Image (cartoon, rainbow, N blue to C red; front, side):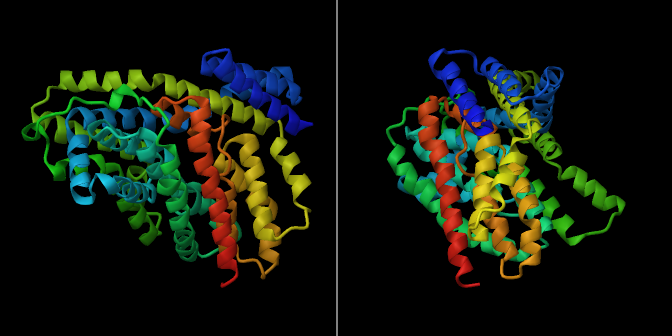
Length: 438
């Protein structure tokens, strides 16, 4: 019965947004409240559940998205994005620009959390799209596929790293196996699948659309790349150091603090303020106006993502994940497939890849640790693949992509949801093939 209620809630949300044209944030709040009522959450607990979902979601992403939008706006308006696009096209050619962005997305995705990587990737995608008059979804989706794969499969991302701890696996082996599985998943779900999406009409956010500047007014290539990739550099440097130094001394704590995603983004925008601003002759008043416009343009996106967080929290508080878990754990099925299936169903129901992965791991931990025929490294990857499946309207990433690319729900499902699902199934297939040889 609970699954039917969730399904009806999702249908109601889609109808409110696409047919009734209700504001998406308001639609999320209404659906979250009604869903909580029908799932049996007490009346006096529903509001607090909605508020917790809103607060938790905004607390984790507000700094990242706002500073990311500021950085992206400055990179676009200063001409740095245009310079990066020209360098990439000059090296790879327009014909192969997709592959260039996939490579950049993969490099960005390894050290950065998904939301941070997304807001960093967007201005690069849109600079290529606007300058060379290319379809936004066709160009952008492969890069986002690379980000998604690293988020679901590869440590040091939160979910795979947590799964490594749960199953007591070797993180280095998990990373190597993850890379083997990740490469075909990115290629098929990214550039190859994107070829079928050329006709999707997308009018991306104007925030990242800058005037085409003459070459002599563009910042240098080194300055452009180093500023745009500063979050990657800082995050990667801190990750390497923390993996080498396992002490609990003052320096370790300082590096851990400086490597935290919100602090990384804050430091990056401060650096950009000088490298692409003051040192290029821009006034603080001009920079302030850029930052204000950037935050104004993405404020609606923040509300929509917060609304999706409220909906997700209601589902979590209802205990639906536990019901799904108990009904699936005794199914007589190959363990790696079972891990994928449990994670996928929880992902569809709750919308959170991290919650889906950790819940599935908690259910299967005893089985994996007590059965030496199950490769724990592959179980991490199988659950990670399942946690990416079928991203739809209860997932904040779905709305982040939809609003930035300014797509209809139908086209978002056709591009984003299908891409995520392809990554999930290809990941499972890769795990099963690896299981035959190791």
